[in-house]
Image (cartoon, rainbow, N blue to C red; front, side):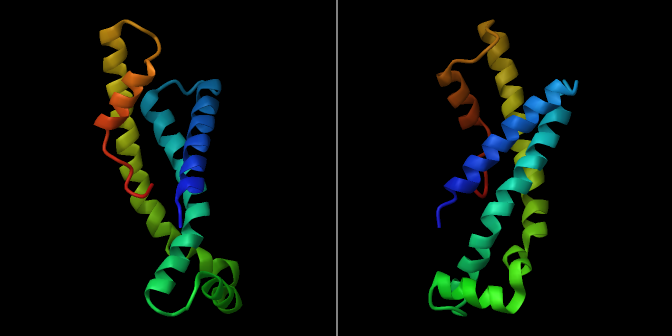
Length: 138
């Protein structure tokens, strides 16, 4: 299953929460990054975890296809079954993603200081993203 819907949601939520942090007077980059990444990870794993649970069950051979796995899981455990492991996923992803985005913010700050511009060009943004560690689950 594609991670695109969850990844798209991650970035949309991260940006929206970061904007709200700034509007609320939280201008500290570290604090606003932690808060925005936490919110984004909740949204990401809310979408991604059910697909991961079904994938693992299929790989373990407990279901012949994804729809069969979803039906069996729903009958046996209800909605809660689709979120098995979500706390562990969040506990892993939050510090990793926070470190990635803190590094990205530091790189952007350095690139802006060198260029003397308030905003980075798309190329500079891509370079900053490329120098940050890749997201582990996207």
